[in-house]
Structure formats: structure tokens, C-alpha cells
Image (cartoon, rainbow, N blue to C red):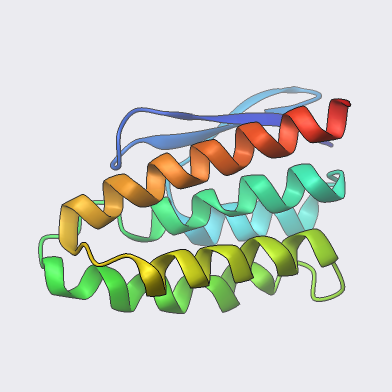
Length: 130
């Protein structure tokens, strides 16, 4: 069971998933999606952790003009973990709108996405403990 998680590093960092058996480092979106399909995870936490897939998908991108294109394709990919999860639907919708409304490109867009995912994750954690 996944009981928590946090991002380590900047836009090219990695996600540390907290499992009952220890910590798992995740550095690719496919690994994140696969793990989330295999492990139990509470709905709001699952949705907020999956949003880090946006950061993982754009790691190390050398061509700034491709960042937005990759981000647009990431939503449906992470959404595939649970098509009936309303928190996940809302999270993907939020980030699709954020990406669409953000005028920045390349590394600056990647940095803003990481900031927004961190904010979203913290907000999800605090609202689930209230």
C-alpha cells in the first residue's frame, strides 16, 4: 500500500513513494502509473501523487518546444490508472487547464508545473487530514 510520497529535487528530480515496506524511487512516468495500478492507495493521495507524472514525463527535455506537447499527452496516461476516480479526474482537469493557460514554455514551464504539482499535493494532503 502507498501511504505517502514527496518530490526530491528540481524539475529533473524524482518521486519518492512511501510504501508500507519502505521507500521506492520513481523516475519515469510509466513506472509511476504501473506502481499505482499495482498498489492500493487512498483516492485523494493517489490523484495528487499521479500529478507528479507531469514532472516525470518532461525530465531532461532538451527541446523546449516539445514540453507543452508532452504535457498534454501526460494527462490521459496518468488518468488511465483509475477511470472512475473523481479526484483523479479533477486533478487531470486542473493540470490540463493550468498547462493550457500558462504562457511559458520549455524549462520555465517545467518549473511552474513542478511548483503547481507540489502546491496541489500539499493542498490534497492537508484537506484529507482535516
